[in-house]
Length: 124
Image (cartoon, rainbow, N blue to C red; front, side, top):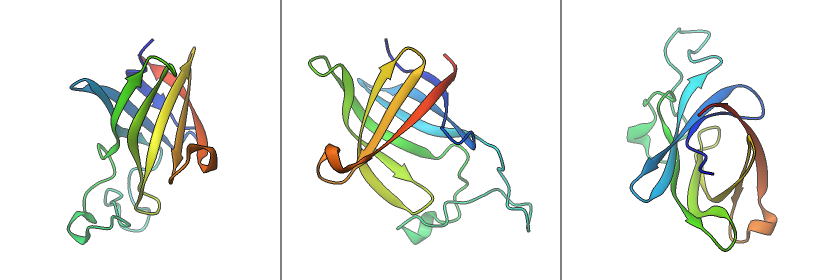
């Protein structure tokens, strides 16, 4: 089973669309509970991006998952990256799917030290 489709993060604050990008999987933010800044009404931007030229880019449709390839031996998508717009950091990433739950684990160096998030399928 391939996790292509729309997924809600565990907080319910955002939806991520996972899609094929060549032979790999990628993902982008497609929905935010609060897509605009409350004080200005402008779309929320990628304020913490390490590249100053990208800090005005809207969070909506921002690519947050890249280059995940399927490993049949471990039955998961590995060797990808996940970007956290809350802090501007990019982490190594893998994903594993069980029914309609997707474990997304970001880590630095060793996966055992990372942090898992569990997303729920919104629609295929």
